[in-house]
Image 1: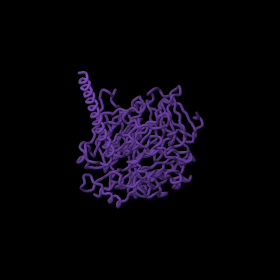
Image 2 (image 1 turned 90 degrees about the vertical axis):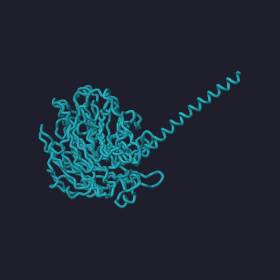
Image 3 (image 1 turned 135 degrees about the horizontal axis):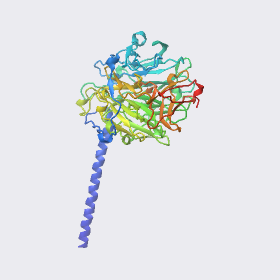
Image 4 (image 1 turned 120 degrees about the horizontal axis):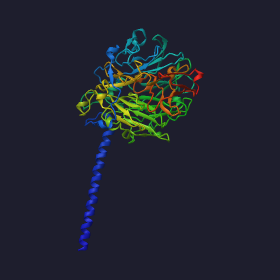
Length: 596
């Protein structure tokens, strides 16, 4: 009898083991299916879209204080940024047109440049009066802009050291360098390159005091190549598709000769990267960000690549770059995959000093939130940040880290919209027009919480959104936005936060020749005991197809009362000033009384 009982017990044990193995096998199959679905997301394959997780109203302590009103029509903006679609379903028609904000007439407010792939760029002078509604005047016809075709993006920078912001207009074709002669008059200087420029920006890579130029291309493209790729949505007829059927490209670096002439030198400075298995270019760049990642005193370049690994190009101080993307953990998401990366922005946490990098990705991929650890390596903390689940359904382009509600913590803005107007036919739950998302910053480093869309005003309008740029358009102390969309008039979004006078520290930096407004400088708002309350690198090249204004806005009493502002210029020069009662703080590189 004891032998019989033992055999029965053995059989029970075996049944439990087999049952456990079956459960593990089933779980593994589910995980594999999900992983394969993620990897195939950027091909727009038929299937169910993944629904976002709605925020819990109880988890948000207070209503979000930044609510937006679209004032484009009242402000005089009526230009439709045409997509140029002709019925051939060509890839550039899906990518949108850019936005640039900056003080082009040196009168102290941010003017507006709208790029347009299917028409000419338009330039608007900011004529907003103090305390009055936002108002722009179209001054394009008095410039050389109206003759530039197929424009995609722009870069603003003083390339000849005369204190005025010049323009680089990027196109599908040659890029146009226009020198600012004052009073919104620009003269053509050079034509650069001959590719599809998808991201561009000025920075001083070699420390010689003038502005060099980094230019990124998306893919090797022509109408003939596009027609040969012949992507389809459901097997019948052409459709807009991903860049996987196109060859990659190289970044180009143009070195300023000191007089405003640019010399291409990317190949000799480490930017000609090739695949390890065959000698082909590796870049499919859509986003650029400039930041001193390794804190050695010079600007490095972060590149968001669509379906190929992201790149982190570390600068040795002389303008020679080494790719540390894979070694630093920045190249891939947490699962080791390349993502459909679009927009990009960075922010260094003021208390911990840790660098945060946000990247907007394709539909059915969560946005990436990379956080730099003490060793300098990046970790993809999308899920832990609170951003992962709510962003899986969205297709994100414009991406900004900015304190929209002025509570002292940086928020994450994502501008969304699909590339295929008919996507709902093959992916239930997907849509072409999508609402933007705002994630309110939390106290923990890289912690975010989704803000309900009904608290955002016009920012939550479903659109086929693309570029996003920020500036204080009406100079009332908060961050306004301009958002482009496919084949439509952009949204000019007035922030109704309207802080009380004196409650915001508004920092204006006057840099040395070649960097008006202190491009590349590090701004730190300090407590009386020297602790850093707010920290920001002044960079125009952010988001996607965008240039942002450089005036810094920081709440005066959050997290604690601000006492002074310290600026570290790119050459290492430091200036520090006490904050005046009205919060309007000017720091001038050439003022020796500000030395600190």
